[in-house]
Image (cartoon, rainbow, N blue to C red; front, side, top):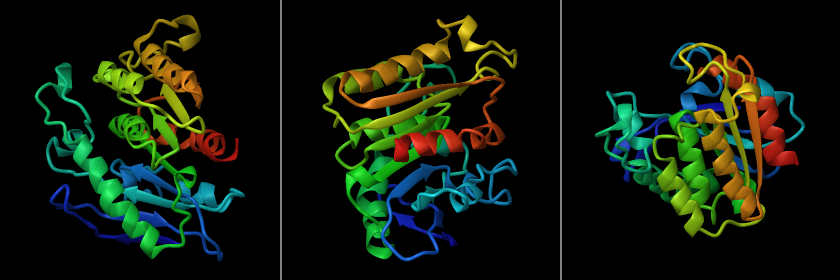
Length: 255
């Protein structure tokens, strides 16, 4: 069952539509939260007319779970602001107000209690995951570290780590992660190179590889598990991120 409803977030002083998938069978289920929730299920809701196809994937997958997508802001640079956890002096993010912590407060303190009270969830951290792409992938990594007592799994798809990676790594160095923490990091060979394919096997020193590898290593060093995936020919778009769904969902939930 797919649901779409408005939800008022006091921490953001704004409405953010929710896109929710609930299994059509009895029981209680794990929950995975996603940023940019409008891009998850239906092409007609997706920003660029192509979704991740998560509804079709879940319908054919043997693990039942609730998926909750939190739609982003669509006005000006507000999405960038709400998906930026730390201030950045880097290029296109220079001067953007970092409201990522407010976004996570809205998710943890408002959205999660509502979902747990309204739907048949298993509310424990072991059964709670988070995911996103691009800036949403950065937020998923941040959420896994800052809110590890609530979230045990993260899909960080083409995460925009480089802009604030130093601040994230510093926080990871100062934070104790539970050893059952799991994270999936990915990037494509057609993103970050001006559209020219540059397979990571031939360039292990690339910026995308190094930021994802370093972040994954910090999780592994604390006893967690992390998977790296380089999508050959992968672009920074929903059509290619859809192809990764059958990879990151089993890694996070069935391994």
